[in-house]
Image (cartoon, rainbow, N blue to C red; front, side, top):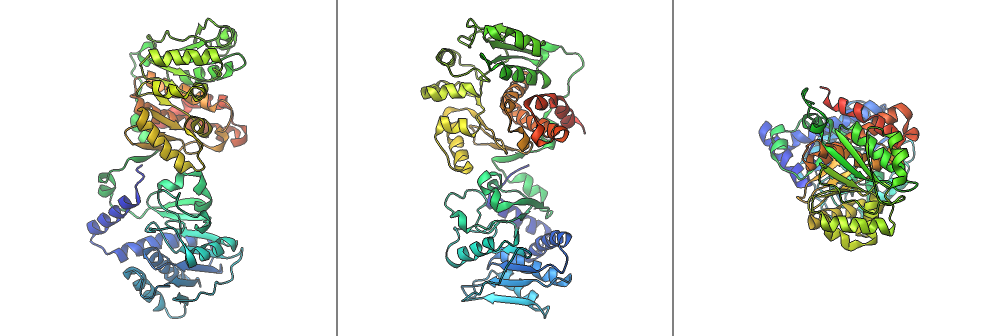
Length: 505
């Protein structure tokens, strides 16, 4: 599913209005009806409802909701903030007049001073101050109003966007001046800012309202940002042909494990097989032979010359893909081996975990990563490589710059794992759960990604598929064990089921 910028959403609304031959006011009525239905489904008419409407079209939505609720037997108290007299949008003024035509309504138009109503925990506030059309951070009286609403303890429902929050980037905002919604009823599409952890407190539960916008406009208007969903993966995943053998599904080389960390190698190898790789070879120190062959008898063991660490790994040419990092540690011998590998082998590769930590110890190695390679850092690993970041949005911006600079794909792992490509494309994963925040989960992902690349999917597609399947397997594991009980091995065990679920029509 596409994730559009604010300007693109505006164009989709305009094209939908033009295609249907309706007015903007008609579209506002449609949106308000969808919001009203959600409110009616949750609260009875006896609920005290306080509505705050701004002077623009988001305020028009809120006023239309107030009228529709009144018609359904509710008795909302509505405040229209028109502090710059006659500054209302045309639709906001029309909706105000239609609300007043009902007669006995509790309505206040604020043009100068404003007496804040008493609000408490039993009240429902509908926030229609500012939506996606906001152009500057809230200040002055609006900022004070937002802070008062947040401090009231009332249950808050925001229309389209929490007032004060921008659709994309919010670094310039004073976070005290953004509505802390319990529910955000957004129109048709989630916005990029909804996927950043720092904004979760503002958005609360996000419910997408389908306004039946024009599908041709949605299809035709381009974007560089996508939400990965099951339907996308269903069409991307190939069925296996009957007359094939293991060599048709690729050979994975995993450089993984060290003394005390062979579990990482085992998890990655098991995940590669569970995801469909034909052959998996694990290059590991000599002491890993027994645990690896015992836990993953299907895997080929390639011993390093060193008994305890990976100190040399250059025999890669016969493999479809090379993945380096799970559990290899960051000792000097391994760091030197990685340095040698990156400087002498120009084939694109997959770098994870301790491979990234080794590069952090020797930052010049960033320049030696082969073009087209994939790195899979979690937030701490990313910050160790590229500097500390306070917010996820600034981390994403940095990742977009570094991806283009080094010509690599960055898989930035998190609640919403983000895949950042050097061509500027951004893919946000929709699967996964907090139970996957467990040791070894990243090693499993490495095996899955390597497996799909080995099977012949182009790396750009393989990464998207692998991240989605990994998250879906985690969701299946959580269904079975609960989020507290998920282990990395449970994710591995559900990879086959996840793939089957995606393939099912």
